[in-house]
Length: 219
Image (cartoon, rainbow, N blue to C red; front, side, top):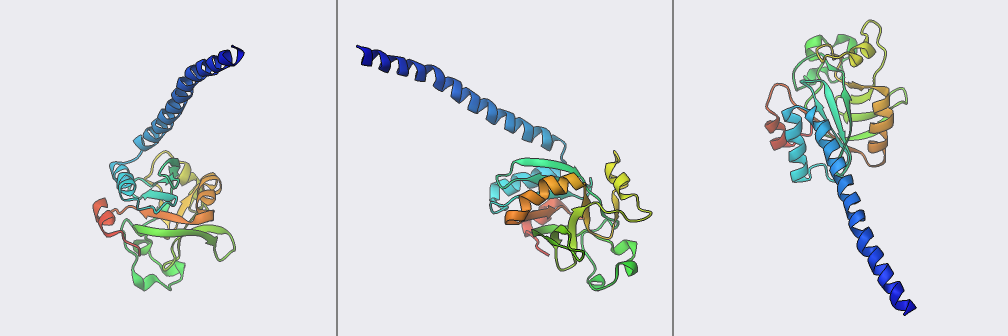
């Protein structure tokens, strides 16, 4: 009789607790999905379209990735499962075009005019590595030495002020590299990309985003 009572008790406990457990799992999933939706509500239609395309085609190859919306000077960072991790403003190259002139490849920065200070669009396999000063950056386009890194102080450019402003109209100031806030690089991008590398998608300004998705450009 005692054994039978124990079996009945355990069965009753399972019957009561299992639905509660399942409900908690569902609520947690809904909460995570709601966060994703809320974060992406801030994104442009082109960013949302790119995220959908990446998910559908598994284009990130199980790697973390970032999408840079040049038109709005904003970055969205995702983990390997396409869950949004964080987002924030970026500083970009002054020129509003998508291709770097090859003639500037070995030119000193001081000789590169404003029309040639370009953050190129494309899809890039990106890794964390040291720059010429030994500081970690996220290398995006190694051919043209385009990197993503914490915002730096350049006399007369007020880069930190530009990054913190409420408008994106003053975010075009660099020679082509992408500047982000120190916390975003240190606490989000570096931990995600350092172990395994990742993909950086830089959306075009002078062409529709479909052109990038169709070509999977890897300059």
